[in-house]
Length: 209
Figure 1 (cartoon, rainbow, N blue to C red):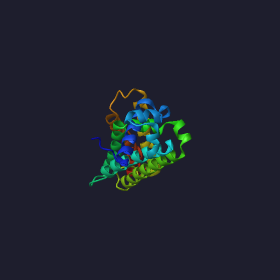
Figure 2: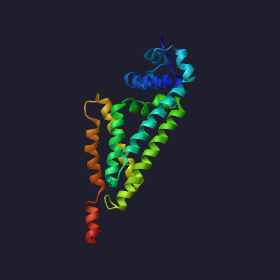
Figure 3: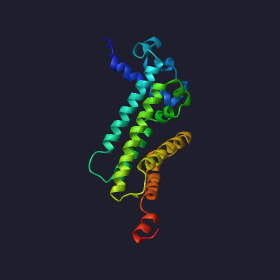
Figure 4: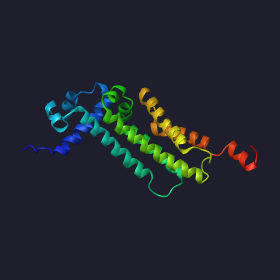
């Protein structure tokens, strides 16, 4: 006897299929017909769960947001120096992108964003929260003497997050021919070294300008 799946189970399946196909086909080429085929439903079956395609994309954004928030929370657990927390947050973000490669495709989809204000707003909110987390850790690292105390935490956070975004683009267009997390860790170390005390810190210690 065939067991009928609950509405929540079907919604989860549709969201999962959307993420898979967004990676395979690209978000702008993805149709509800393709999604329906992937989950064994008709198009009207998709629309019973998500009356508009915009509703489906917003549910996808909510799923991605939940995954990101969970990764960020785990990365901040325990007692560690702020620079290590920055490493953990960036590493978590890169691992999530590597395991869910549709994320950069969705984030950088111009057509999708121009047609879906709700999706754009959801991802902007996510990135703003991530920026706030990184900026907070930068501020603490500056106060603890781990990074230069003349840094603007917001600016430093934008630079660090820019590393993730640029690397995700390079990874995508290269055909994912390198380990995203390892490359990100290598480049982040260079960036943190540049944000730490260097000649400016040495000059202050010597009392010179």
